[in-house]
Length: 145
Image (cartoon, rainbow, N blue to C red):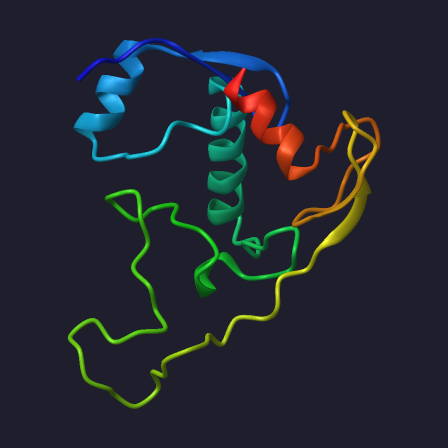
């Protein structure tokens, strides 16, 4: 396996961080197939917020209003991927399961202007003041370096 350090832009704070070869090996050993989306500090802060919500009995809600326990997060599930809930696991059909859809509400999208090229775009999160938002093409170009 040819591995090399990768520069990644944090999804939360937009800082660039290095996903080192050692980190990549550790991720592979744990069965993770994708690189992290957040820097170490933002991952730690996110874990602490989640732990605080769970210990204080707070509702584990996402910004979009969906309950994490209803299938919105893979946190706590060993293996990195959450099994799909809208299909039976053993073929055939069973009550409560149906093909071709899900019981989840429609995803909300928000209008934004790309900070790099000025193109109007839509994003699956509510843009915050002071944070740059990029269209899909510009974001992909930034990620690739």
